[in-house]
Length: 380
Image (cartoon, rainbow, N blue to C red):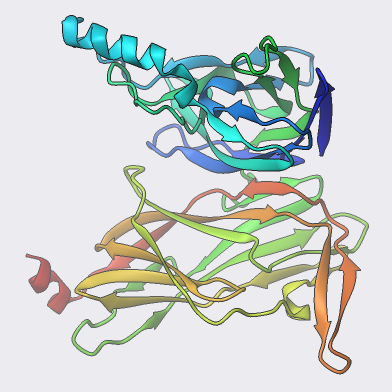
């Protein structure tokens, strides 16, 4: 937590300790993205208004001290809209209802937001885009949804923080600017000898896919085809660490053109964590975790389902024969884990020695779905 106080109003900001993103291959249209969670706790007796798109501005500082501040940008300004009497009236209404553009956070309460962060190549420059949720009552019709943009970055280890602007006058208080503490933000290359893996301070994380080409199951026979997709962690340090595989792996699959796949969720009975979810990896050793993953047909759509360890599945729908990019994002929240002792019905807690509050994305791996004759006839 990062507490701050001004004008008798105390709040806390929670954010990740470490964010790691490998750069995408420049020749492809892939945008490497992760979601950054930030929580604001209002510990005061006063409510306050909050809108991420008008309040949070990311900042990166390189190891040499250079500061990269974000600019508010737009995907594609729509400049063909004429400013007529109706547009002017609309803008006046928006200005009049300005306070509706903010979400009220009650006293002794909090709010959590998710900010999408993308690494993308543009005009031979490596840029970082931060897409911010906008609470505006009237969404802008003049521009595409805004985002904060940091341009012309290089590989390396950065320090990352948010500048938070207290957005509007409340209780006769003037807008006030505060900054969170710095966190680590790494932009790295995949390993030269293994493009499916990255390394952070001696710890290697790799997406495993075997084989890389998979036959689509027969729709007529309603067969489910297992797919070996997993995460491998190798410990190249001199210290043994416990790792967390319980609801930490976020599976991502996109088309080769960068488009995302429609995602659904299937509920199931909740499951408790087990010792197997928290392997101890000794120096020089590795372990691989394979969630239960299958290809299957549902309502004439080819789907991929991957198990969630706490229960249920994530479903990726309407797949077609062809190539896809897949990977995992390792999202760890805690520095301990809790296990239920079945003998005395009590919980016991054990520490997780490796970094807590992390978001680490592995490089994308290419998956090829091979068509079969009856499927080709169906889609023609």
